[in-house]
Structures are given as structure tokens and as C-alpha cells.
Amino acid sequence: MNTIQNALDQAVADGIPGIVAEVRDGDRTWFGTAGVADLETGRTRTQDEQFHTGSLTKAFTATVTFKLVDEHRLRLDDTVEQWLPGMVTGNGNDGSKITVRHLLQQTSGLVNYAYDDKDMMDRYITTGYLTHRFDRWTPEELVKIGMKYPPYYAPGTDFRYSNANYQLLGLIIERASGRTYAEELSRLVLGPLGLTGTYLAGNEVTISGPHPRMYTKLPMGEPDAKVYDVTELDSSLGWAAGGIVSTTGDLARFFGALLGGELFSPALQAEMWATVSTEGSGWIPNTRYGMGTFEQNLPNGVTVFGGGGALNGSWTYVMGTRDGRHLVVCNVNGDFVNPIAEFWKILEAEFPAA
Image 1 (cartoon, rainbow, N blue to C red):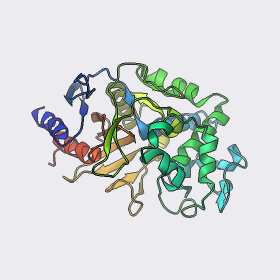
Image 2 (image 1 turned 90 degrees about the vertical axis):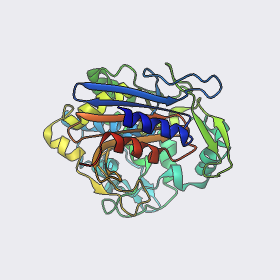
Image 3 (image 1 turned 90 degrees about the horizontal axis):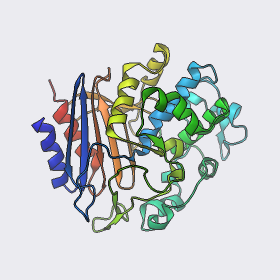
């Protein structure tokens, strides 16, 4: 495993504070680390750490949705209006034309309030984040922000990444099940898979178990920006779109099951990985989006499958083979350099071109 360890060491040399990687390949498991969990104490990163997964949450939300479809509680072709009447309306937005499938595939056309609203951008990419990271949100409030803007396009005609889609899915899960999103997440995914290190953070501002400190530069994108410790935050901004905390081991178990077809019927398994092009959307290059998941062509030409997610200071990537038997889970606790580029180097080390 010297090649992948070299890639971890290089990520730290490039400016990442600390990085962990867990590899599952059939019966073989390997864990590696480089850098530190805490810049002040020099504490090293460890295998039992929990961290914010950001938009990897979407794969969990999609899975809960599919499990409810298998239970005949909802259908992929149900509309948003059927489940959430009057919530998606105004400025050309029409919930009667947007289906659960559109939400899952990010083809609804709904605006991403997290990136296309100036007030939200000011709150979360400037030094304003130091105080606004403790703001408490409801999913209804976040969806309402998106309703201030006309849709990007007609539903089902293109791809555009939007957190509003998965906030709506969380609300639909609650309506269809009669239980909270957190309860359904535990009942349908976390409990059956034994994911004891994974939970929905909700309004908690600290991670419950051992965890690294998280570091970010603010304002984002400024080369001379100052580094801040932003470990504590209110996770309600993420919720069903980005609020899950997990570990490398739990993520490997979850994505192994998700890719390997353990979680729902073969028909829904095919739906989950039926991808749409992301070209021209400004999203991660060389990808096709599934339902809370995506596939990616690495720079060396190898195609891998999984997901990724980020919050300020915590970036996570899980990618592997289509059958889920060979996976790499990576997390970094700083975003001073491009973490995705570092993840690609690690993936190329583990999945070399033939």
C-alpha cells in the first residue's frame, strides 16, 4: 500500500492539515493517515474518528426514499405537489410538474439556495460564516429561499445540482412514513447495516465522538485568506441534504451495500445507478449523476462509482468498483487546497489504469 500512502503524504505536503483513507477490497482492509487532526496539539488522525459528510448525506436520503418505494409508501413518479401541497410555487416554480425522480436525479430545475442567493453566500463563504455557522434553519425556510428565483429549466430537461431537491425529499419521507427523517434513516439504513458511528446531527453543534478539528480559509477563494477552526456548527443547514456525521468504516459498509445491491430490489438498484450527464452544469467534471450518487472518470481513464460531500473544513469522497467490493473512503479536515484533486490522486493510486 506504499503507493496510496505516498498519495496521502503528498496531500499533506500540498497543504491539507490531515487526511485519512480506508480501503476495502474483498476481504482485505487497509487504513492510512497523514497529517494531523489538530493543528494546535499535533494529535494524529485515527480510524475511529467521526466527521461531517456533507452531501454524502444525499446517498442516504436517496436510499431511504427507495426503501419507502419498496414498501409501497410512495412512488418515484409522485409529484412534489402530491406530498407537499403549495410548497413549490411562484416565480415559475411548479411542484405539480416535479417528481420524486426529478428531485433524486437533480433534474428538477429548482435553484440551489446555498449558492445562488447572495445573502446565503455572504453567510457561508465570507468571514460572516464564523457567526452564521450557528444559525438554525428549518427545511421549509431553506426551500422558501429557493422559491424567490425562477427555475433553471423545465423539470426533467437538464441537470443542475441543488440542495433544495434533497430538503424536499426529506420532507416527503416524513409525510410518506409518518415519522421523522432521522427515525426513518435509523429504521431503514443505520440499524439494518449496523452503522453505529453514523447519525443525523440535527441541531447539535459538536460531534458526539472522537473527531478531528475542521479548518477553512475565509473568505473562500482568497489566496491570502486566514485559516479558521470551524469544528463547531449547527447542522440544520444540511439536514437531509448534508447533515450526516459518519466514519470511514461506516461509509465503506454503506456504499459497499449500496453498490452491491443489498438494500433494495434489482429494479430500484438499476434506477439508483441510471445516470444523467452533468456536462455544462459547473459541477464536478467528468461525472454522471445517479440518485444521490455519481460515477466519475478519473484522469487515468478508470471509472469509479460512489459519492462525495463537503462542509467548510470537512471534505469526504467514497469511490469504488461497480459491484462495491473494492472501495476507497477518504476524508480531509481542511479545504485550503482543492481536496477533490487530492482525492483523485489517491483513487488513481488504488485504481491504476490497466
